Length: 81
Image (cartoon, rainbow, N blue to C red; front, side, top):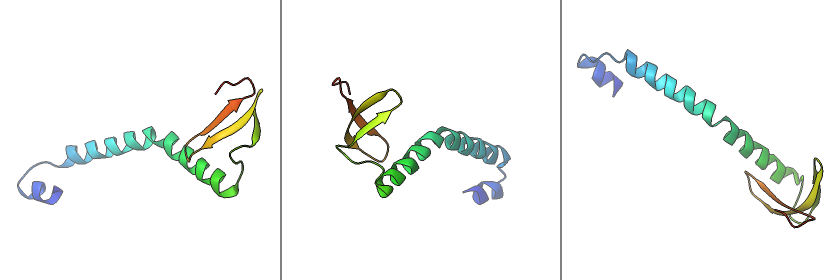
């Protein structure tokens, strides 16, 4: 597409700059998502914890009820989720 636009006389420099800025914005925006997915994959492969395990996170203690690549659901001893 860029070659065709260039051949018909359209200045593609602003398009390339815009595409670069958009790519940069998307990469910064997806940083946390990518980090969470990678961490979740490592937890799953290393069996760091499993459903039913008792875990302590900071001052809170609870049971792991569900696990996905992106999140872990923990129910506290008080019943709070």
